Image (cartoon, rainbow, N blue to C red):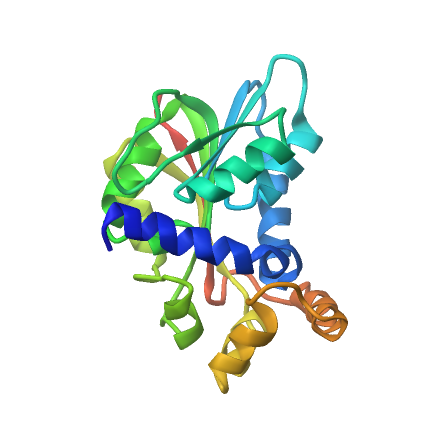
Length: 246
């Protein structure tokens, strides 16, 4: 897709994904993981969420970690969503960014990038751009899907999924050493993907096409409890934490 086509695709997507991202159990657990990792990092003043979408994650991080000297940034390829975020969250700085083609002017102490790199055709360029925006000693926290690409994920715009070695190798090439990289999600996250793709069009209509029904929210809530029983390091979700060499 060309740049304007990519922007328009995600303009449309974010009209449909708000409830899905808020209530989907895997999204909830990814946010918990990211929050836990940031709590371990000391002496930082700037944080950017690359691929911030509707700003759910960056706003949670702002509420948890804000102080007078810290600055928070949200960057996304959807200009419509960025404008909506600016109006809704005036204390966070938002910019439109195509991570596969552009590099922000700023550098950051922490970068989060959750479920984004799989949407970018040139993922190596995206990782290089992320790494170039980290201050020396800065941390990056990435989540991506692992393994096969299901039909529902193709509809979400996934170009590829990853293996641990791919992330570690590409970040190492760009001066970011791996602190941890492990899979997660077995058995319930993996099972949920399989079940959703028995009738993928119905799943997308019920769960990723606008406001969720009370029943859909209830089903997600029950599934979310089961996700606490998922194993590490098995599953179709990858977590990566890296630190840029000084």
